[in-house]
Image (cartoon, rainbow, N blue to C red; front, side, top):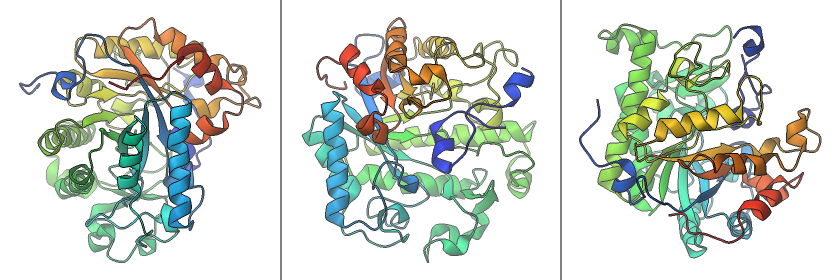
Length: 418
């Protein structure tokens, strides 16, 4: 079973939507999130225009490993300058791609995507530089963390000496050709929060951003072997699925609470796969027939996080074209608009700029006007407060002119993000 999403692209996955789709179809007392972090709850708000900068596998930046510190810095600043030229106002920089760090973390090693060797000091501070340089340019800098992914391979011996996953092998599980921290272990949940909180305490980041990897996407024929953790910690739950969802809920809720204590102005956002559940499974779900849903397959109750106010913004990866037969952009965006309505949580739509290609097998993505039509469509949903484009490489290259069309049609001037 495959899914559509940039994360599959980052991992080298080929499919974009579930093949099976064709075969068959307690709130804490506190202010709304947007009020708490300085945004607008229900009133007018500035438009969020963002782009993701992926560091894993050198997707966007650095262009390759082993570049000098000066070259890495120059490439990063060039991406920020491109954001300004495209009249964007925020960048989402991946700073913890595989249980490593793009800042001098005392808890995890330097990222291998900088020097080619995990743990090797690159000779500069990428995150600190990025925050300062973004703010100098009038851009917000949202630090993008992946909570549980440890490596894009299954050999712990390839990790840096002293890596937490090597010191604590009982924390780690192999699955689908990758290594993951086990979300069912309370000590893992504490550690990954500590690792992310270190960056927030050090730097005035405008946002903490998570993508769609919680429990991993399902791999046919493989089981995520968390039997021991479930036996130890899951006894009070009716099912393993309920226990897993509670584990993810707890991570989100606890991180939200920690951020309020560490740096209250920093906003907390998640960019999930865009389908929570299909409405043939749950009447509260969207009129879609996607083969993956976050609730059932990733154990991520994204709708609940919005309703509980645990996140300040949500960026569903609406990576389908208008009129898609199984997951229509025109169905997904209004569903999310209804979901955030009245919550104070801001809705930004994740856009698949990477799919815009004159050689695409899908006619809609060959049309340079497809993404501009997305932005036009979303304007009819007042809850939509902006868009985020995946990814920076395509914002720069713009292979079929789709980004230039969005800018010409919708971004006539620069605007502050909030």
